[in-house]
Each structure stands twice: as structure tokens, then as C-alpha cells.
Image (cartoon, rainbow, N blue to C red):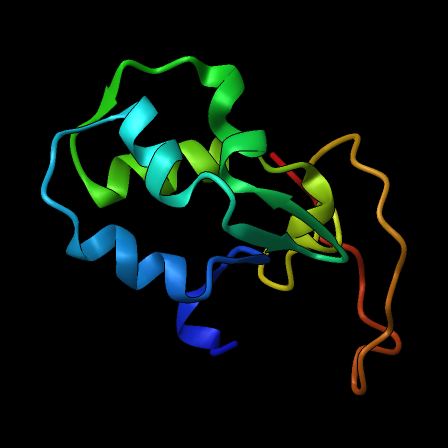
Length: 114
């Protein structure tokens, strides 16, 4: 499956294109009839579209983006990979992070949060 259909660790595959080509709004029942058995990869786990978003109990979806948002709101944190990872910000006050020691970081002083 292509990286184009992977978002935040969730792989929609061909379902992404199929959702985009639908006429909206679409009822939840119609969505499940047409695509409910399509598998969505989330890290090392998979679930069908229906298994994943059925608990939301929506009447209808107004766009492909609404369906994608429903999917993203229901995936477990296993799909996103390493928790609390950011290579751009220093640790927040009280946050416990391991030092990862990138090259050239030896001897640097810690940043202080204000």
C-alpha cells in the first residue's frame, strides 16, 4: 500500500480513494453496506471500517474528511508509534524524557522552562 494513504500510522489503502469518490452525505448504514468490511491497518493491528467507527453511532457523514476524522478519532494510540515523541521541543516542566544524545550534544546545558 502506498504512503499516500497512510496518515498518522493509519493505512486506508484503496478505501481512501473510494471515500473520496462518493457522493455525500452518506448514511452510516450505506457506508457500512458499501465499505464496512474494508480493513484499515493501524500499526501492527487491523480492523474493519465498521468495527472501528460503528461505536460512534453517526446517522450520516457529510464528506470523506468526516469519515477520515471518525476513523482517526477511533484508532488506538498504537497506530501513532512512539508516544510523546518530538524532536523539536525541549521537555516541558515536570516532563520526564530520556536523553537521546544526538551527535554534537555532549556538554550542552539543559534548557530551563519559564
